[in-house]
Image 1 (cartoon, rainbow, N blue to C red):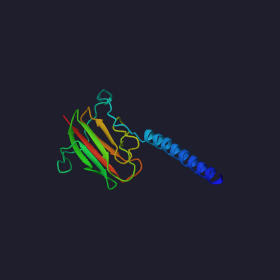
Image 2 (cartoon, rainbow, N blue to C red; image 1 turned 120 degrees about the vertical axis):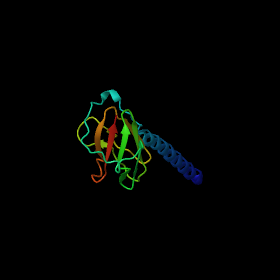
Image 3 (tube, rainbow, N blue to C red; image 1 turned 180 degrees about the vertical axis):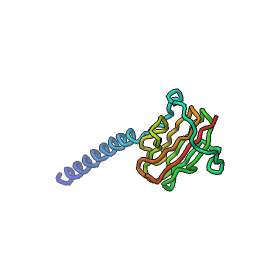
Image 4 (cartoon, rainbow, N blue to C red; image 1 turned 90 degrees about the horizontal axis):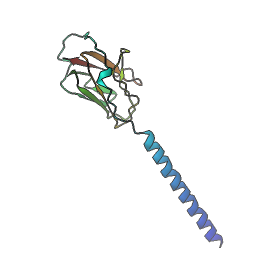
Length: 144
Protein backbone atom coordinates (compact mmCIF):
# COMPACT_ATOMS: atom_id res chain seq x y z
CA UNK A 1 0.00 0.00 0.00
CA UNK A 2 2.81 2.42 0.91
CA UNK A 3 4.51 1.73 -2.41
CA UNK A 4 1.32 2.62 -4.36
CA UNK A 5 1.02 5.95 -2.53
CA UNK A 6 4.63 6.88 -3.32
CA UNK A 7 4.18 5.94 -6.98
CA UNK A 8 0.96 7.97 -7.15
CA UNK A 9 2.65 11.02 -5.61
CA UNK A 10 5.61 10.77 -7.98
CA UNK A 11 3.25 10.48 -10.95
CA UNK A 12 1.31 13.53 -9.77
CA UNK A 13 4.49 15.58 -9.40
CA UNK A 14 5.61 14.60 -12.92
CA UNK A 15 2.23 15.58 -14.39
CA UNK A 16 2.21 18.94 -12.59
CA UNK A 17 5.78 19.64 -13.74
CA UNK A 18 4.83 18.81 -17.34
CA UNK A 19 1.80 21.13 -17.25
CA UNK A 20 3.86 23.96 -15.75
CA UNK A 21 6.52 23.44 -18.45
CA UNK A 22 3.93 23.59 -21.22
CA UNK A 23 2.39 26.78 -19.82
CA UNK A 24 5.80 28.43 -19.46
CA UNK A 25 6.79 27.41 -23.00
CA UNK A 26 3.59 28.95 -24.39
CA UNK A 27 4.18 32.15 -22.43
CA UNK A 28 7.78 32.40 -23.67
CA UNK A 29 6.69 31.70 -27.25
CA UNK A 30 4.11 34.48 -27.12
CA UNK A 31 6.69 36.92 -25.70
CA UNK A 32 9.29 36.01 -28.35
CA UNK A 33 7.23 36.79 -31.43
CA UNK A 34 8.87 40.02 -32.52
CA UNK A 35 6.87 40.84 -35.60
CA UNK A 36 8.35 41.97 -38.84
CA UNK A 37 7.41 45.63 -38.90
CA UNK A 38 7.17 47.87 -41.91
CA UNK A 39 6.65 51.55 -41.19
CA UNK A 40 4.26 53.45 -43.40
CA UNK A 41 6.02 55.38 -46.12
CA UNK A 42 3.56 58.24 -45.59
CA UNK A 43 5.15 58.97 -42.22
CA UNK A 44 8.57 59.64 -43.74
CA UNK A 45 9.47 63.31 -44.14
CA UNK A 46 11.72 64.27 -47.01
CA UNK A 47 15.39 64.37 -46.05
CA UNK A 48 18.25 65.82 -47.99
CA UNK A 49 21.39 63.83 -48.57
CA UNK A 50 24.50 64.99 -46.76
CA UNK A 51 26.83 62.35 -48.08
CA UNK A 52 29.02 62.39 -51.14
CA UNK A 53 28.61 59.82 -53.89
CA UNK A 54 30.91 57.00 -52.79
CA UNK A 55 29.78 53.97 -54.75
CA UNK A 56 32.59 51.87 -53.28
CA UNK A 57 30.73 51.95 -49.92
CA UNK A 58 27.32 51.06 -51.30
CA UNK A 59 25.69 47.92 -52.56
CA UNK A 60 22.58 47.13 -54.57
CA UNK A 61 20.92 45.00 -51.90
CA UNK A 62 17.93 45.60 -49.68
CA UNK A 63 18.85 42.90 -47.14
CA UNK A 64 21.20 43.42 -44.22
CA UNK A 65 22.45 40.55 -42.06
CA UNK A 66 23.20 41.15 -38.41
CA UNK A 67 26.05 38.78 -37.60
CA UNK A 68 29.35 38.77 -35.76
CA UNK A 69 28.20 41.93 -33.94
CA UNK A 70 28.06 43.93 -37.19
CA UNK A 71 25.61 44.96 -39.90
CA UNK A 72 26.57 43.28 -43.17
CA UNK A 73 26.75 45.14 -45.44
CA UNK A 74 27.06 48.18 -43.19
CA UNK A 75 26.39 50.69 -45.98
CA UNK A 76 23.81 50.19 -48.70
CA UNK A 77 22.19 52.30 -51.42
CA UNK A 78 18.56 51.81 -52.43
CA UNK A 79 15.93 53.71 -54.40
CA UNK A 80 13.03 55.64 -52.84
CA UNK A 81 10.22 53.24 -51.93
CA UNK A 82 12.54 50.31 -51.22
CA UNK A 83 11.95 48.18 -48.16
CA UNK A 84 15.15 47.19 -46.37
CA UNK A 85 15.08 44.07 -44.17
CA UNK A 86 17.54 43.40 -41.35
CA UNK A 87 17.79 39.80 -40.08
CA UNK A 88 19.49 38.94 -36.80
CA UNK A 89 21.76 35.97 -37.47
CA UNK A 90 23.78 36.61 -34.31
CA UNK A 91 23.72 34.85 -30.96
CA UNK A 92 22.76 38.07 -29.14
CA UNK A 93 19.79 40.41 -29.37
CA UNK A 94 20.28 43.63 -31.37
CA UNK A 95 18.34 46.70 -32.52
CA UNK A 96 18.17 48.72 -35.71
CA UNK A 97 17.76 52.29 -34.46
CA UNK A 98 17.86 55.52 -36.46
CA UNK A 99 20.81 57.63 -35.24
CA UNK A 100 19.94 61.19 -36.24
CA UNK A 101 16.74 61.56 -34.20
CA UNK A 102 14.56 61.80 -37.31
CA UNK A 103 11.93 59.41 -38.58
CA UNK A 104 13.74 56.24 -39.52
CA UNK A 105 14.06 52.58 -38.59
CA UNK A 106 13.32 51.56 -35.00
CA UNK A 107 13.12 47.80 -34.68
CA UNK A 108 12.97 47.42 -30.94
CA UNK A 109 14.79 44.33 -29.69
CA UNK A 110 15.43 41.71 -32.37
CA UNK A 111 16.02 38.25 -30.95
CA UNK A 112 18.14 35.71 -32.82
CA UNK A 113 16.42 34.71 -36.07
CA UNK A 114 14.03 37.67 -36.11
CA UNK A 115 13.75 40.24 -38.91
CA UNK A 116 12.69 43.87 -39.18
CA UNK A 117 11.74 45.79 -42.31
CA UNK A 118 11.53 49.52 -43.01
CA UNK A 119 10.41 51.30 -46.19
CA UNK A 120 12.33 54.43 -47.21
CA UNK A 121 9.99 57.00 -48.77
CA UNK A 122 12.35 59.95 -49.24
CA UNK A 123 15.83 60.41 -50.67
CA UNK A 124 18.62 61.05 -48.19
CA UNK A 125 21.22 59.41 -46.01
CA UNK A 126 19.96 57.51 -42.99
CA UNK A 127 22.41 56.44 -40.29
CA UNK A 128 21.48 53.72 -37.81
CA UNK A 129 23.03 51.78 -34.93
CA UNK A 130 22.40 49.01 -32.39
CA UNK A 131 21.26 50.37 -29.01
CA UNK A 132 23.03 47.51 -27.22
CA UNK A 133 26.37 47.59 -29.07
CA UNK A 134 27.63 51.10 -29.89
CA UNK A 135 30.26 49.85 -32.36
CA UNK A 136 27.50 48.49 -34.60
CA UNK A 137 26.63 51.21 -37.12
CA UNK A 138 25.33 51.39 -40.67
CA UNK A 139 24.04 53.74 -43.34
CA UNK A 140 21.26 53.52 -45.89
CA UNK A 141 21.59 55.98 -48.78
CA UNK A 142 18.28 56.46 -50.57
CA UNK A 143 18.33 57.81 -54.12
CA UNK A 144 15.57 58.98 -56.49
